[in-house]
Image 1 (cartoon, rainbow, N blue to C red):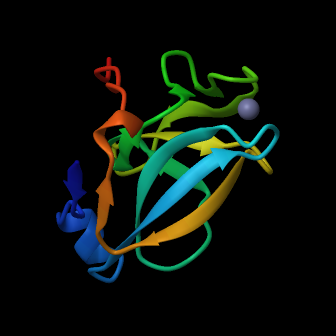
Image 2 (image 1 turned 90 degrees about the vertical axis):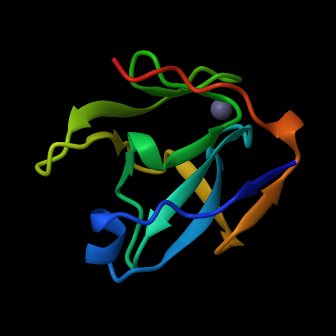
Length: 116
Ligand SMILES: [Zn+2]
């Protein structure tokens, strides 16, 4: 089991000091992709690399993609504050709120590639 608690850093503080975990699935095929830490309010427009907390079924090597249907979901770019992020394509993801802390079965997780 993994007890997932939010990263608390200056970015989270700047976004209101709270986070929620989102279970993100492929909007096209429904395949589970990753668990994302979303900081603060507002729609999900981009996914910061280090906020993709648990990768389940996303390709992250060459943009963001679904490992099941291979749909391209977003492009890697550097946000203006210097953080690597994926700019999400329209209707790329479905998201479901999981709460402010999460316990996951370790079998859900696969290793995330190191950022390069
Ligand atoms: Zn898919």
